[in-house]
Length: 258
Figure 1 (cartoon, rainbow, N blue to C red):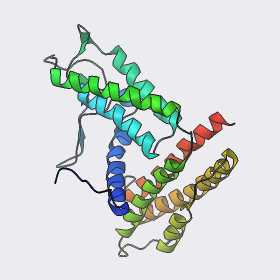
Figure 2 (figure 1 turned 135 degrees about the vertical axis):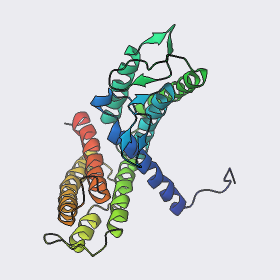
Figure 3 (figure 1 turned 90 degrees about the vertical axis):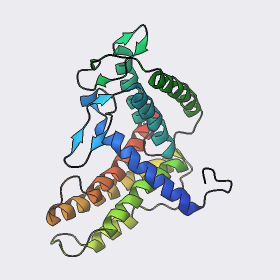
């Protein structure tokens, strides 16, 4: 069926959040200074890894909305969200246009329009709609509390992916320094049952979680290195995502209440 009339169960909601968190990994990985804040069109895995260094108005609009969604889900703090939006919008403002219209493809390194130059009413319309949605989303953030339950939910999403990656590790390549028990204990130490009520409680919790996240990352790195896995191993990637999420929210608190 295309539509659901009954509310989502907690299990269904968690499945959707995890799928969305995996999707955000694409943007978190490939959108940065080297792309001037613009999202690449796609990443090809087979037969060899290839990143398409081009973008379109639709890609840009989807990335802007995905950044706001990442903030709403608690994967990004407010400062990091604003920084990402400002970089992208600053680049977009400088792109070459034709009578005010964006061309359909730009090189994410040189920012030049790709030949043959042409304008797509579909892509232009997509970007226009995305920008309207972005404006409304940004206005809502102004009146939203800086910290709240969404922060813990965002941390939990990455932590669930660490657990999932841990479950996929077989015992055929045992490690010498750390064990699966060490990993499980580090994961359990990051679970939070209730949301703090005051800025002081938030500060104490985030500081404690940062230390525990550092331990988790150290264990994940050691385990993957001793097993011979690369730096893009899922266990290491999601452990680092847990720490990055906590750090992002800590920045917000440090700025608002030094």
